[in-house]
Image (tube, rainbow, N blue to C red; front, side, top):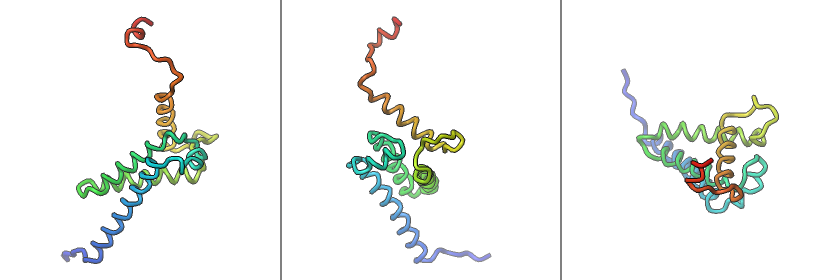
Length: 137
Protein backbone atom coordinates (compact mmCIF):
# COMPACT_ATOMS: atom_id res chain seq x y z
CA UNK A 1 0.00 0.00 0.00
CA UNK A 2 1.35 3.39 -0.99
CA UNK A 3 1.23 6.09 1.66
CA UNK A 4 0.83 9.41 -0.12
CA UNK A 5 1.48 12.66 1.66
CA UNK A 6 0.07 15.89 0.23
CA UNK A 7 2.67 18.02 -1.46
CA UNK A 8 3.52 21.50 -0.29
CA UNK A 9 1.92 22.96 -3.43
CA UNK A 10 -1.36 21.12 -2.74
CA UNK A 11 -1.40 22.27 0.89
CA UNK A 12 -0.82 25.90 -0.04
CA UNK A 13 -3.34 25.78 -2.88
CA UNK A 14 -5.98 24.52 -0.44
CA UNK A 15 -5.11 27.20 2.10
CA UNK A 16 -5.26 29.98 -0.50
CA UNK A 17 -8.61 28.82 -1.91
CA UNK A 18 -10.09 28.44 1.59
CA UNK A 19 -8.87 31.91 2.53
CA UNK A 20 -10.39 33.31 -0.65
CA UNK A 21 -13.81 31.82 0.21
CA UNK A 22 -13.67 33.24 3.76
CA UNK A 23 -12.59 36.71 2.51
CA UNK A 24 -15.43 36.78 -0.04
CA UNK A 25 -17.99 35.84 2.63
CA UNK A 26 -16.62 38.44 5.05
CA UNK A 27 -16.61 41.17 2.39
CA UNK A 28 -20.20 40.39 1.39
CA UNK A 29 -21.29 40.35 5.03
CA UNK A 30 -19.58 43.70 5.61
CA UNK A 31 -21.47 45.27 2.71
CA UNK A 32 -24.76 43.87 4.01
CA UNK A 33 -24.11 45.14 7.53
CA UNK A 34 -22.40 48.49 6.90
CA UNK A 35 -24.11 49.81 3.78
CA UNK A 36 -27.29 47.92 2.89
CA UNK A 37 -28.48 50.88 0.80
CA UNK A 38 -26.03 49.71 -1.89
CA UNK A 39 -28.08 46.53 -2.18
CA UNK A 40 -31.50 48.18 -2.09
CA UNK A 41 -32.42 47.69 -5.75
CA UNK A 42 -31.15 44.10 -5.86
CA UNK A 43 -32.95 43.12 -2.66
CA UNK A 44 -36.21 44.72 -3.74
CA UNK A 45 -35.91 43.01 -7.14
CA UNK A 46 -35.99 39.58 -5.47
CA UNK A 47 -38.70 40.58 -3.01
CA UNK A 48 -36.76 41.23 0.20
CA UNK A 49 -36.98 44.45 2.21
CA UNK A 50 -33.71 46.32 2.84
CA UNK A 51 -34.22 45.87 6.58
CA UNK A 52 -33.64 42.15 6.01
CA UNK A 53 -29.96 42.70 4.99
CA UNK A 54 -28.48 41.82 8.44
CA UNK A 55 -29.97 38.31 8.31
CA UNK A 56 -27.97 37.08 5.29
CA UNK A 57 -24.96 38.93 6.70
CA UNK A 58 -25.24 36.95 9.94
CA UNK A 59 -25.54 33.73 7.92
CA UNK A 60 -22.44 34.64 5.94
CA UNK A 61 -20.47 35.40 9.11
CA UNK A 62 -21.58 32.10 10.63
CA UNK A 63 -20.61 30.17 7.49
CA UNK A 64 -17.23 31.91 7.33
CA UNK A 65 -16.47 31.27 11.00
CA UNK A 66 -17.44 27.59 10.88
CA UNK A 67 -15.52 27.10 7.62
CA UNK A 68 -12.39 28.90 8.88
CA UNK A 69 -12.12 26.83 12.08
CA UNK A 70 -10.21 23.64 11.11
CA UNK A 71 -12.20 21.21 13.29
CA UNK A 72 -15.50 22.31 11.76
CA UNK A 73 -14.27 23.01 8.23
CA UNK A 74 -16.27 20.15 6.68
CA UNK A 75 -19.52 21.40 8.25
CA UNK A 76 -18.56 24.93 7.19
CA UNK A 77 -18.04 23.76 3.62
CA UNK A 78 -21.52 22.21 3.64
CA UNK A 79 -23.01 25.44 5.00
CA UNK A 80 -21.16 27.54 2.41
CA UNK A 81 -22.42 25.30 -0.40
CA UNK A 82 -25.97 25.56 0.95
CA UNK A 83 -25.73 29.34 1.28
CA UNK A 84 -24.35 29.77 -2.23
CA UNK A 85 -26.96 27.32 -3.56
CA UNK A 86 -29.75 29.38 -2.05
CA UNK A 87 -28.23 32.59 -3.39
CA UNK A 88 -27.93 31.03 -6.84
CA UNK A 89 -31.57 29.89 -6.71
CA UNK A 90 -32.75 33.38 -5.83
CA UNK A 91 -30.52 34.98 -8.48
CA UNK A 92 -31.49 32.55 -11.24
CA UNK A 93 -35.24 32.71 -10.66
CA UNK A 94 -35.25 36.47 -10.24
CA UNK A 95 -37.17 36.33 -6.99
CA UNK A 96 -38.49 34.14 -4.24
CA UNK A 97 -42.05 34.92 -5.21
CA UNK A 98 -43.09 32.52 -7.91
CA UNK A 99 -46.54 31.96 -9.33
CA UNK A 100 -46.11 28.20 -8.99
CA UNK A 101 -45.57 27.05 -5.39
CA UNK A 102 -43.82 23.88 -6.60
CA UNK A 103 -41.02 25.94 -8.13
CA UNK A 104 -40.11 27.66 -4.87
CA UNK A 105 -37.04 26.36 -3.15
CA UNK A 106 -36.99 25.66 0.56
CA UNK A 107 -34.37 28.36 0.94
CA UNK A 108 -36.69 30.96 -0.57
CA UNK A 109 -39.56 29.90 1.63
CA UNK A 110 -37.37 30.03 4.75
CA UNK A 111 -35.92 33.43 3.86
CA UNK A 112 -39.34 34.88 3.02
CA UNK A 113 -40.83 33.65 6.29
CA UNK A 114 -37.85 35.07 8.21
CA UNK A 115 -38.29 38.40 6.43
CA UNK A 116 -42.02 38.42 7.18
CA UNK A 117 -41.39 37.64 10.83
CA UNK A 118 -38.76 40.37 11.07
CA UNK A 119 -41.09 42.91 9.47
CA UNK A 120 -43.89 41.89 11.82
CA UNK A 121 -41.61 42.10 14.84
CA UNK A 122 -40.39 45.59 13.95
CA UNK A 123 -43.77 46.92 13.03
CA UNK A 124 -44.63 50.01 15.02
CA UNK A 125 -48.28 49.80 13.97
CA UNK A 126 -49.15 46.70 15.97
CA UNK A 127 -50.64 47.43 19.38
CA UNK A 128 -48.54 46.80 22.45
CA UNK A 129 -50.20 44.98 25.31
CA UNK A 130 -49.02 44.51 28.82
CA UNK A 131 -48.64 41.05 30.30
CA UNK A 132 -51.85 41.47 32.29
CA UNK A 133 -53.97 42.45 29.30
CA UNK A 134 -53.20 39.12 27.58
CA UNK A 135 -54.56 37.20 30.54
CA UNK A 136 -57.78 39.25 30.51
CA UNK A 137 -58.66 38.64 26.85
